[in-house]
Image (cartoon, rainbow, N blue to C red):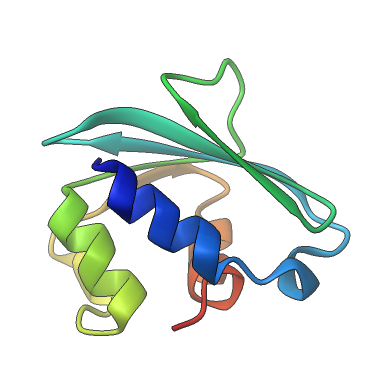
Length: 102
């Protein structure tokens, strides 16, 4: 994942939506390696690599993530068609668009 994509996510982060949340989103990108987001009661940290115990793990391409975040791709459709694979607390994935609104 390019730094610009990470920077865009950080710029769009909505701390109010993350109040009281203590979750780790692990991303495995088919075209850009692994990164994880640590959301801790309204704060966001982005790290490269793998976390030992993520709340949810999401596997996809960076293009799929961009599409979901922009609203061009429906996350549920991506999941159903195999563009997005998720393990762990899959319902957390549905919160990504409220955590990172357009």
